[in-house]
Amino acid sequence: MPLPVEKVYPFFSDARNLQSITPPELDFRILTPMPIDMREGALMDYRIKLNGIPFHWRTRIAHWDPPHAFVDEQVKGPYAFWHHTHTFYDEGGKTRMDDEVLFRLPLWPLGEVAYPFVYPKVKRIFDFRRRKIRQLLGIA
View 1 (spheres, rainbow, N blue to C red):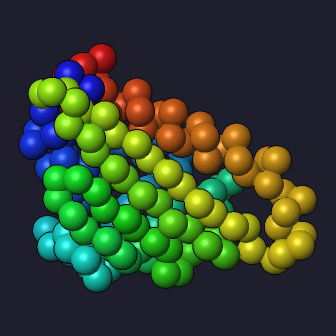
View 2 (view 1 turned 45 degrees about the vertical axis):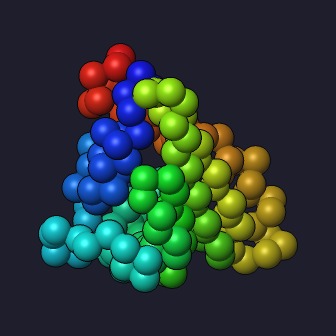
């Protein structure tokens, strides 16, 4: 992104921006009262619909290192495991942001059968986020 990390990181550390970068069909709603004090150990509850089915999701900030990185992990939700690392790299006044998502589906080994159907949906969510972030930060 053609913006310094000092401008990009605050956008990601403000939970209010999550709804605007989530595809509308997921009907994402933050349940935790705002503002959320983002820090290691912070908890955030929200509701999300996957395939039209509503889920309560609780996220914990497992690692917080502004403006370089943070990690959110699912405490409760639709996955057996969800670990999302956001890493920000200063590249001479520009920012490279990497998302790494590790997830495991519930009901192993049956969940593994669903992986080929779930992975493209997760990828589509992150593709939407990438486009929306660029638009909201004025880089589209």
